[in-house]
Amino acid sequence: MSVKRTALLLLSLLFLAPLAHAQEGESDPRTWHRLVGILQYLQADYPAAVESQSDFELAEQRSFIAEANEAARELGRKGETFVARLEAIQQRVDKAEDPEGVSRDCGELVEDLVLAGGLARSPRVAPDLELGAKLYQESCAACHGVDGKAQVPIAETMEPRPANFQDPDVMSGITPYKAFNTTGFGVPGTPMPGFPTLTEQERWSVAFYLFTLRQPPCEGTPPRASLEKLANATDTELVQAHGQENLACLRRKMPDVDEERGLLVTREHVEQALQLASTGDMLGARNALLDAYLKGLEPVEVTLQARNPDLVLKLEKAFLSTRLAAENKSPHIQDEGRVLLSLLDEARRDSGDTMSFLSVIWLTLLILVREGFEASIIIAALLAMLRKMQAPEYARVVHAGWVSALGVGALAFIFGRHLMNGANREMLEGFAGLLAVFMLLYAALWLNARSNMSKFMGELREKMKGALGRGSMAGLFAIAFTSALRESVETAIFLQGLALDSATGVMWGCALGVVAITVLVIFVNRVGYKLPMKTLFKASTVLLVATAVMLLGKALHALQEVALVPIKPIPFVTIDLLGIYPDAMSLIPQGVLTAVPIALVLIKRRRENSARLADASSQG
Image 1 (tube, helix red, strand yellow):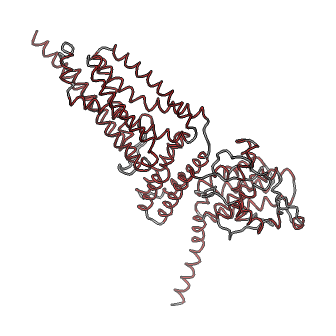
Image 2 (image 1 turned 60 degrees about the horizontal axis):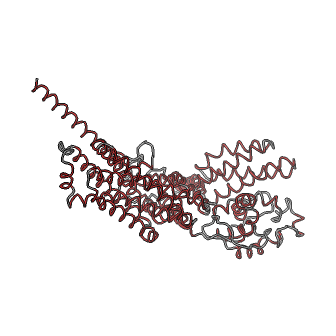
Image 3 (image 1 turned 90 degrees about the vertical axis):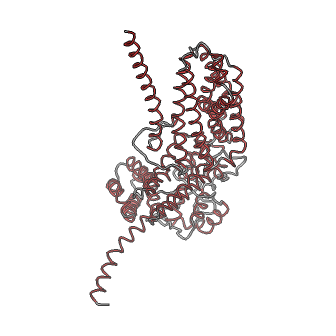
């Protein structure tokens, strides 16, 4: 190799080395966690350092912000967006000014960094407190003391002194996540070293163990709280949320992570998708995202929906946006994915919360009334028309239809966790919705035909006996069945989620819901019977078409979530209750389904007006 070529190679390596280092830091979560840990220390300790006016403590804070700036630059391009904010903080820290503003800005930066880095701030499995105790005795007790009070000879020689984990003031300012970062990276400019050889699970075990040192033995069962919440809450925050009497058990007994496991599975698949996307494998990323939704989120979505429907809607939007970015090979998939990870962690925080008995009753009642409203209105309208047509003997067909749908819903409630998870549930909702659309359109056409019979009013009884033959009986049954089926199954799955918090509350809510729906059906039936025949037919036709449009949007949206229908987002509003979503694949069919009946009515009126004019001119 020539000297010239050797020189060029060396220059190339020198040029590429910083770039490679930046890219490594950009993708290394440890760098992100280190920066977050430093800012957490500034957020908590800087105000006290300014108040003390201690030269040593202020110098320590200046070293923290300098270290934070260095860590941000190691993040490469992604860290550039935070450098200006860090420099603004550094200017105030160097002058020992604005303690409250610096603390606030550090807290906001932490949240933004967690989002930008897609960081997990809690363990993936429950920490092992026995392992944490063993590691603490091996690595921490020499400086912090066996009991955590830091009353050992070597502590007297250190500046600053090691933290006293029995001190309420010290413990009120830290969380297990902050202790996790400290264990991994240490504290710059202090005797506290990092322990990079410890695994992530070992660091979490030590971090959670520290919070047991000042707690008495646990007596009883702790209230439900998620790992995500426990890892990011101080002792003071836990006392405010659950009471002082429950603090010891919350810190000494790790929660069952069954409910969080689905969200953890989801997070792992999303992280896998982002890794695949970073290598250019967008098809693999898209499939991993689909698995994340069906295998992780979908089984627990019912419980989340019952507790926080707004969050579930955000999660669904984020999943579709991230999957669309993968399908379009968009460079923004990493940004979309990190937003999705942040929402999943928010869902994990809520997953350990339990609703009260009264809240479960109220939500159950609302779900029954909401889901049963559409079906009950249609069924009540059918019954009212049968009475108006003097054919009440066919009411038993309608009753058989909706009762059968309730039976299917009961089976879904009993076996739903095994049969209605993942793609099965979404496909059932999608195809059942499309079938219901077809049957509702059939009912609308059937009603419209009856209302257009010129001699119908005079020969009502005879005509109805002819019209309601075997075929019409099957049609009536199908209309009643499909009108109630989707809502019945969906309600059953919702109630499963609520029953985890209070089965008794679900029972009381169901009883009140049945009463409310019964009153609604009786009211509509009575009112419908008193309406003029033509008005009743027209109102019922409009109702059936409007319901079909709504169900069409919901059915197509469900099939999009299992990738059976493509995603084509457009700028528009989302109204989940009405089945309206900002996507061309659902909005265009809904628009066509809405426009066709309107066009038919306008054509019909135009023909009737032409016929009247023709009759008037012939008579003249």
